[in-house]
Image 1 (cartoon, rainbow, N blue to C red):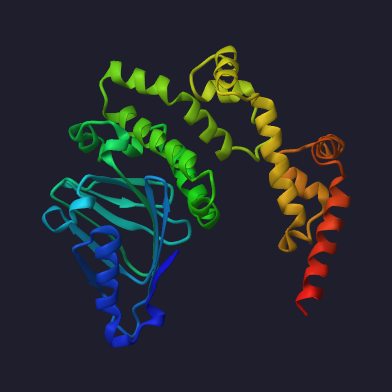
Image 2 (image 1 turned 180 degrees about the vertical axis):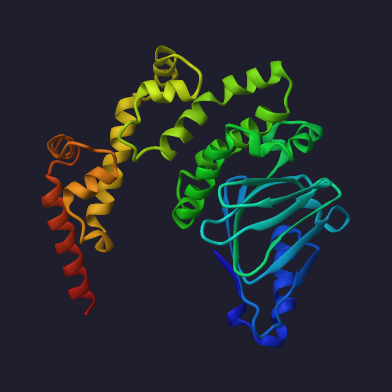
Length: 329
């Protein structure tokens, strides 16, 4: 949901509007801008998914500062995960005495109960982040703080990054849909695993690893869904378990590993075949982009799932678009 676009605000009021919105939505106590008001642009979107609050902030150069003493009471116990979005340069991140550049593909961890933290970028930038109450993580504050400089060494970082990108890409649908709570729970578990993988003692790390294994497996599957070599052997190897253990884990979770992969790939291909902006691509190209290397196999599985061939589905989808346009006219 859009909460601010400074292009819609009179020039003289832009700084005040930005400060008011980021203070209300994220507990930011100060904003430092390098641009004159006439050249400054910021766009902020916010969504609620169960216990998670998701943020997308983009625009010209900026530095956001949050002070523990000035943070709103209901935000003091929050923990945030942030990333510099793809194609938008490098951010500067500082928290609890730790300073680093946050490049695309890296995550920053911010416990709001520490003294202060800051984040910003030069030129055009974009940050995607979420926050959640630390109570949802069920972890001590000291453990969370210890993980701040270490998260980039965690094997879970890439999985949580993919999860964050997924949430942002479908934020409008997820925030209004029945899956919001489940997605939030999975994101919390990945965050917990991220922290414990670098900051917990050996016994606790093993315990959290077991508790979050299914969540991490599903996140891994989503992140690599379009890759043809996404085999049970590869998934098991990536998580340090046997294929037998992996199958048992999925069975206990109520699904078949192979069927889960096929179903999600078919859903993605079906959506692409119906999308107007994908009309220039052949059916075979769409199938390959979703991990199907054999056209005959893709057509057979598609027909089994949807009762029609991929080509017929595409033609019906195009006719539906044409009919809807004629009705609008």
